[in-house]
Length: 131
Image (tube, rainbow, N blue to C red):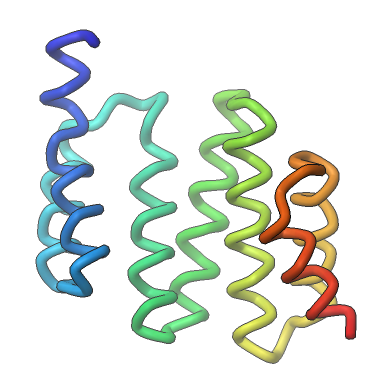
């Protein structure tokens, strides 16, 4: 692995660790630092992790906004189907949890299931949302 790559995403990994430890404030602090150093190609990861943090806080409007930013970044840089499909899934599920834009959320889950057809979690969430 490229040494510069490690230093570019170190704070992102620290933020991810804080997120998993449910220390969201510390995760946001590390993300602020990471935003200044991360490479353009990896910028979508900032929006993804911010979205996950806002999801954890049940601030779905903010989560949706961050997932949308991450999805736009990933599409613009032509990331692979797994990256874009995962972002479609996160965005869709957050929209569904918001309970205001369920149909739009289902559409994102459908897109995610088409991009990553063998992902059981996406298929289960999609089935549950349709029911």
